[in-house]
Image (tube, rainbow, N blue to C red):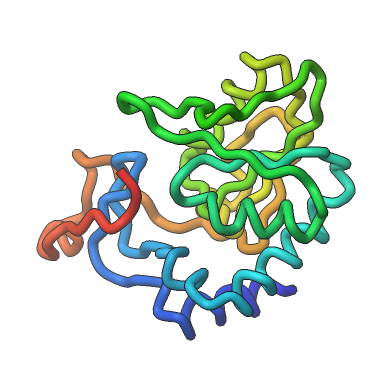
Length: 188
């Protein structure tokens, strides 16, 4: 699957939003990738999951972990495509944790899957959970890398779409963007 095909999916599903958005990272942007809109149709989930799984297969993970809520749908589909175990980390008192009886074995090779990466905060938290529990992070996979490869996790990082999407610190928002009311459409 090419980057143009992925971008086409986001545009066709209305999942590439234009306006003034406050990202989970606190940065402001003119574009927002609302993956939930793209992933509401199962044929699209299967298509994106298959493409991401194909790229991630070489990492030879045995388990996929995704940070909730954004990574859940695509993480589960990548795990299904690769026939791997799927677990997720979720918020508890504002911090990602393993719950629901999920366990990570010492040395277990794990693939972290996320929908969109801007600064990589949720991925870093998830990597920390894997390490704390004795696991080994084989790599990170995402549908969209808004940093165009600038974010580094210390492990292989693959994506279906890598773009350098403008993002601004709250005190450095351009005047034209300030004129548009800010919306925070993503996960909290």
